[in-house]
Image (cartoon, rainbow, N blue to C red; front, side, top):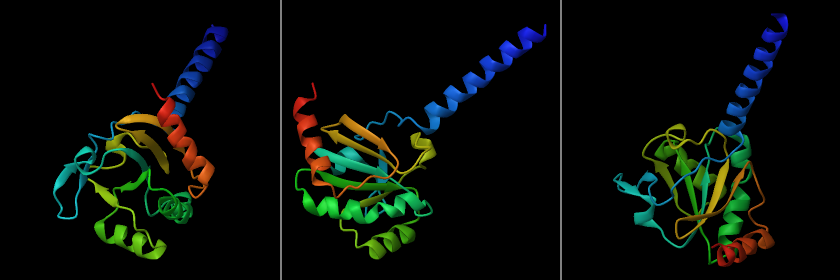
Length: 163
């Protein structure tokens, strides 16, 4: 009986581990064309209505240290490439979004999500995706150096080779 309890405990622990890994260390499937955001007039729009082409979408929050740590490199990356549209998505208040933009000199669009990060299945931030016409090319959990030109160029190569 004790052996059965030990096996049950190990299976339960493994199941919980898989659940937590899937939730917090694997980027969720998102459809960038259907993500609902508030435009500059406070109207709900889908991201697909506002942007098309190659999109680098960064989910973040102002309270997240690693998110704020990559803001300068996101801005630099957005200035270094014309092929990729950088977009920030957050559930922060419009006032907080403006504070972040002002503090880091952000010129790329940052939208307030119409819902929350969690309602978009984003549990780990920063989470960043690159999409080409709605097809995911790559995703990253955690901060990156988005000013790295080789990294940005690799997205264009992957977009060309993506079936």
